Length: 220
Image 1 (cartoon, helix red, strand yellow):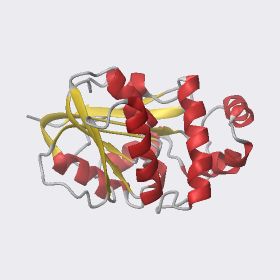
Image 2: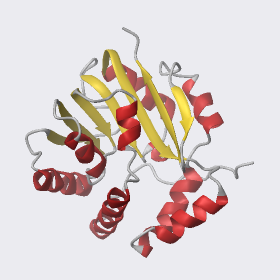
Image 3: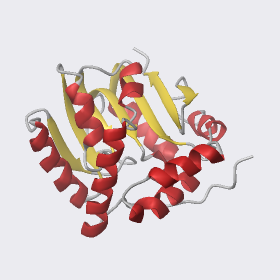
Image 4: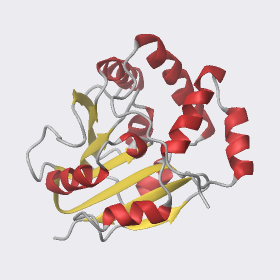
């Protein structure tokens, strides 16, 4: 049985030093291929105008763009320092014309309804103060038939896998943050309970190596 969930933060990573450390961590995760891009593609998100919630320094969305030449990306991020990093990284990828970033909160997305062909998020669900409200917002900004994919850590991950990931996490300064994020993550059963209170309740939840993947499609 998983330990009781411990709420982490709902304000994102704001401090400049912490942002730089997280950028190193995110680059390491990218190099290992632990970024869930395959899950996003597997959910059928491969083209159109797509929203990424909580892009941080942007690597997940930028790696996804590399594999989706017919797509453009808008990232909605709560931290101005992370936005600055994501803009820089998009330029380094050569994607300044295909990737843009705005400051905002997933519980009150700063976009009109039916704005996007798809929505995805990786690694930020456990920080959302009110996931059900965020799910309603995702539904609102999706076009009819639009797809969604939300991936995150799983609190009830096998202890051996947890230890392996902890020991391989670099830089070492980020390891306490990894544990606090894991302790704030949901189990599949908890996520299903939240979904049932939202219009995304047709989504399917899969357990992955050390996380969860929620994917589905808004009705036409």
